[in-house]
Image 1 (cartoon, one colour):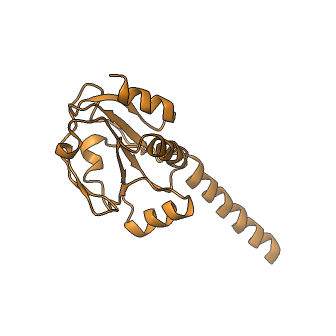
Image 2 (image 1 turned 135 degrees about the horizontal axis):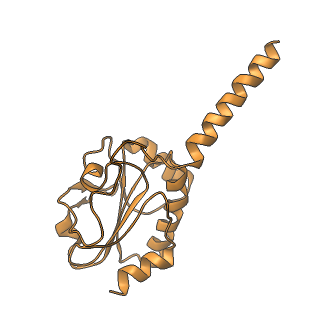
Amino acid sequence: MATGRIFSKLAALSVAFVMATSSCINDDEPGREQIVKTGDRIPSFSVTMNDGRTVTPADLAGAPSVIVFFTTRCGDCRRLLPVIQEVHEQRPDLNLVCISREEDETMVNRYWADNSLTLPYSAQTDRTVYNLFANGGVPQTYVVNSDLIVIATFDDRQTPTADQLIELCYSR
């Protein structure tokens, strides 16, 4: 009898773990959408990166950029982050701004270390910056031109390749 209860609890925990790590966090709330869309100028924001730099739109002007919102608990984000790492390795000159949604520095830093990620990130414990761009779901990826205009967006329904992102950034 005790073995059966232990097995049931283990099975429930396993299902919860798979659900938490295999799918995106899509916030199935009414009105879920990207607020910033293709053709829009990016909103004003300020984040502090893990290397101590402060990044604002003014810092991104004049060069293409990729802005990514993620959580390390999200399966789709876990598939996207290695793609962004590949972009970082192929084009270290590209502005990459990875911003966590409701995750502190300890959580993000641990995930980066466990997965050998070296791309810059900003750990945000709330949704303040995220809410300027979207109101539900991660990952959210914005490809931005040198004039700070969004030229492409990707969400949890589509994961871009590194080649796609690089081509978008440098072909326009």
